[in-house]
Length: 154
Image (cartoon, rainbow, N blue to C red):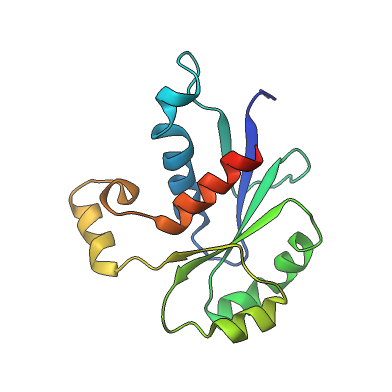
């Protein structure tokens, strides 16, 4: 384990919350885009762990929330565990105009720190068919803001 790296765990509150997508976006914004600015010999300052089973050595945890009510209900036990920790940053993934944000905040009993707008399905398909990474094709403004926030913390 390299303790010179900031260890970031990305955990989906429910299945289908998009933690792999968020982890990939964070890796892109924290490591690939910043590589020349961080270390020439060792560009990865941040270690991003998708779905870690052990939370003890993590500097930051990104809790990924799928705003669909059935997903939040499914993830309630995991949310209860993570909400007791003080190093969690909450991100609503797949945010869209259909989400009732008042109900969302009421259910969670907190204000999520960041939200990533849902990408149109046709753009995800286009990226897949063109063998392109989604973060390179479209701005992931919520994840980019989250990455900026993590840089300031660490």
